[in-house]
Length: 222
Image 1: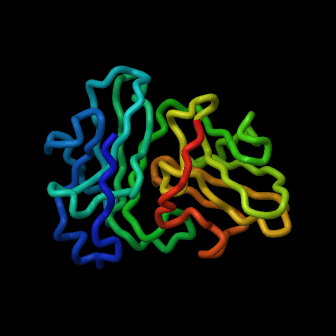
Image 2: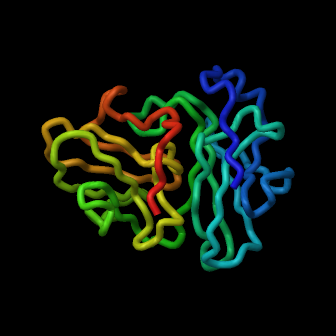
C-alpha cells in the first residue's frame, strides 16, 4: 500500500488551480501515470471513471496532481469495483470545505456507490465484536445511523456490512475515529461516499474528535 500525504494542506485556492490537471491513482494503475485523468464538473469538483477492473475487486486510491504535491485525502480511500468493473471517482480539490462535514483541512476523494451495499458501525462499545448500528439510505447518496453511546472517549469506524476491507475512518479511510461522547447519549453518523466525507452529530469540537488531522498511532481494527 502506498500512502502519500498531502503537502501544503493550508494552500490557498489559487494554488489549487495551479496544481491541475488531476488524476486518479491507486492499486488499479500502480499509483502512477496519467491514464486516469479527472474532468472538471464544476467549481472544485472533478470526476472520472476507472474501467477494466474485475467486478467486486477492492482498490485503494487517491486523487492527485502529477507530482503528488497536491493530493487527498490524507489516507487512502477504499472501494470495490461495481458489476461493470468500474469505479467512478470524485475529487474535491480544495482544503477548505466549510460545510460541517469531515475531513476538513485537506482535499476529499470519494466514489459513486454503485453497489448500494450500505454501511454499519463497528466500535469499542462491545469490543468490536458485532455491528453497533446499521445505516439507512436517506437519499442523495447519503447514509445515516444512530446509536446510544455511553460517556467518555470511544473509537469506531463505518464499514461495508461484514467487510473490513472497505471502511470509513478519520480521514475517510485509515485510522479509527476517536470521539469524546461526553456524558453519553445518541450519536448519529452520516456517510456521503461521493463527497468523500462524513459527519457526526452531536458535532465534536476540535479537541473532542481526537483522531482528526492525522493520529499517528491510530489503529485499524480488522
